Image (cartoon, rainbow, N blue to C red; front, side, top):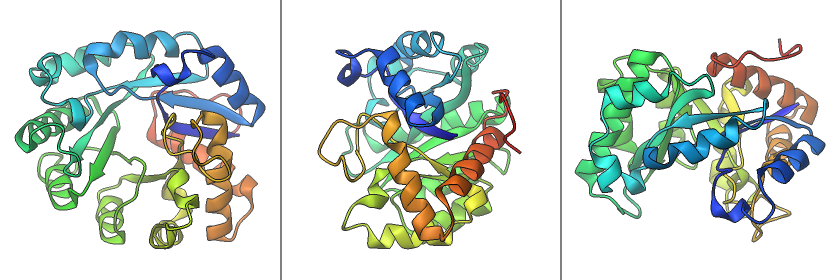
Length: 265
């Protein structure tokens, strides 16, 4: 079994087919569990409504850095976030972090939101789903200084340097790789895959974005995570079955609120 540790099933890109068809195709491809990720707390109801339809789908709650300055997100408190985590389907906090590439939200709003989510993760002991782009130093500084070693989580859709991978691993975080590792110009990132221990790796689609080869240019979907896992297997010199087994074990070790069915030891 494989797990898509990061997708966005409520996005309008999936509206025509509907979540049921997307989940069905994922299962047919051997993807046994999906984590659909919240990017706006104001739209959390849409996210959790999909998770509640399927035993194999759970969700998170959080504000993406692109939306950190929006009126409905700007005043979210630690207490607010914690209140959403009472839902049994909510197993993590995020997607949150820093994005200095687009800067759709001012840096101060991004850092404020990130700090709030880190504090909520520390208080709930739920994993943090971190987005970072061109903001490595501040990302690690806040993870270290605000988290104070009390926060666990995953560096989602990792496309940064080996240095950030090293720092994240040292804090106990997992590294999640997406279809980017299959792209022709991703040689440097593939070296990071080789570096990260298999027992600290997750795989994801970040769908509907970043479809892996051979689907690049198309809308991505959870079923396509098999191609990312295949690339991990090639880079690590192990079988796809070993990657599936270990990344599934890693997922449930991180997202402890989910009780796995079957043998994932």
